[in-house]
Image (cartoon, rainbow, N blue to C red):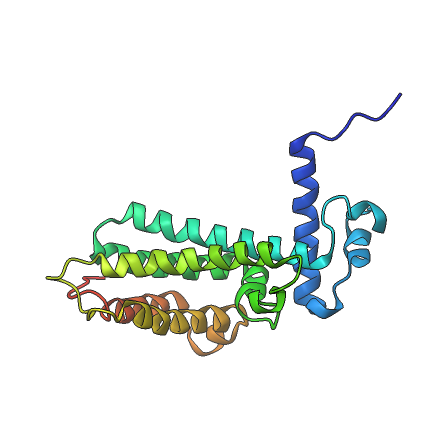
Length: 215
């Protein structure tokens, strides 16, 4: 009797397992040493069978990136939805970014730290459309933050016209530094109370955008 085809949920579960193992292998061995065969062995599949889910490691990698930025966007959007007032919303979205980076350290490392392929590397290839989707998903998160900053009422905003993106990028680099130091456990070595330190940083960075945050 022929084997029944997998349901969509079963296919998605397998794809998720493949992605999880790929994330592990990229962070442990680097993207250049990633192979479909090595992933297949970790999910107990044949090398041939794994190609039923991803045609190559680059397509798989772009799926990791796209899903990661979708998840980050959801974290940031939820923080803004829950805190519509800018006095609470700006600190909340910073906290959401930190929570994402600390909660998913391996995924964060692939998205923001490792020297992995970027959109320009896929231009004029068959994967350019997938890479474009990945880049646009990442930029959607950035645009969300810029919109939140430019939407701060003028009477409480510190941001000059046209400065929102540059200021957002500056604060992002600071938050990225906190995530990197926390995930490497360096921050815990130099700060006995890391939570209090993070709260102070959020309070300070919030003042770049909003007057009298009250954090």
